[in-house]
Length: 557
Image 1 (cartoon, rainbow, N blue to C red):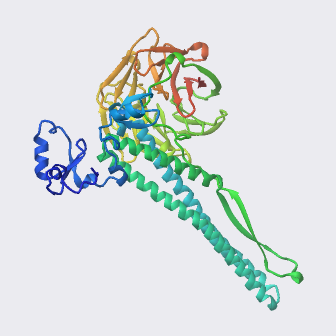
Image 2: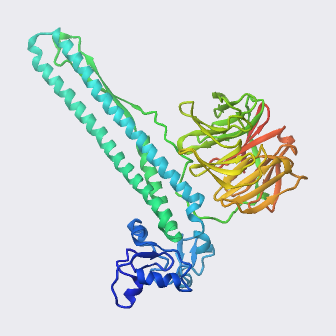
Image 3: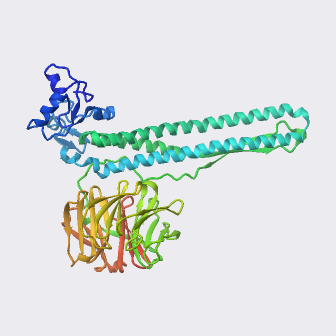
């Protein structure tokens, strides 16, 4: 049955042609007004959620064609084969996948897919692609302007040179001007072709971004999953396209060289085209390869987690309460004592320092727009400060209702630990605030996110709590014999949770289910009154910052 559904599915079985007014994603068929009423009252379907048929038909055509049933056997998909990356019905398992071992229930695979980290990654990638295409297009448009300006300048030189020579050089002047026009035309053609290609890609990315919103709102989970896989491949292809352009991108400039030997002149001069690489910075949340964004079974136990010291850094700080790492390897430290955010290069040298007009506590990196978000902690000026890393300026100050301490990034939003209020979601683009859940929250609490989970430390009771985005508690870790006064917290790619124990002077890693733990760093490794850490998932490195002077970067084995 086609997903466009020109007639009511129930009526069609009765040989009656009626246009549908609603769509049931679970039944995968359209319903006329009469059948919709019966559908909503029937015991087997009364809990089904329907949507207007007009909204459903807004989904992209290729998404509408995705169904819950197997095309080959017309049976419902119940299993997902991770080896072959496909959904299977019971007949498929018997015929084609009876030797496959890596199987999972389809309901487990697609559960919460629309709010999963993988979907966020796709949205981030589409946003980055659009921004990068816009950046390159703007550089090429600026190059077009320079070409035109240079043309005017060269023509003025030619006219000035023409005054000093005899009238019989008119023909030579005309020939030279024709060459200039031809050169400019050729340059404009080459640059114009690239700009046109980039605009086409930009439109494609924009369409994908629009489609993904429709998919999230109106598609079934299976449709959303398959759509995500298709988008993943398209994102990868577009990134390869963009990388090929970036590697071969050159700024083309031209100038004019006057021939001073007048008696031997055969032209006013020669046109010189010089090329040099553009210094274009493209944003990448992380270096991506084509990879399977399917929820996977965690393969690395905390028993196998070990760290090796990579380097030691002098933070020049007096009270480091927050730290993070940028995509290019630079390190960021929040110095509460000096109300300063300090950015250091890979080698530990100072890049820049930004004084904040309020108190500061924690810092987080928003890769989407290359920005740092800094909380004010216990300050009368209740706000979050946004720093533009590229321009090294304060971009914006977001007023908040409570003192914010720990901060993390979740999609396009910031998640904050608000003093006395609980966990809050803040949108930095429209300045809106909403509660994730409300609890009596003390100060100096830290936050981390991973997929649809939130991790929160409370130092006053030495607890680490894992919540979901609805505020339900998944587990609580409390063991003062191993972890006292937990502060900074971060999560690796396997869902293992890293926590700083300020009073126990150590770093403890906790398993994703909260049942196992292991001390991986202590005072013998250089920890002294440590408050903050950050796990960089793109490089598998752990940055641990002491309160004063010293931070250490460890590589995870």
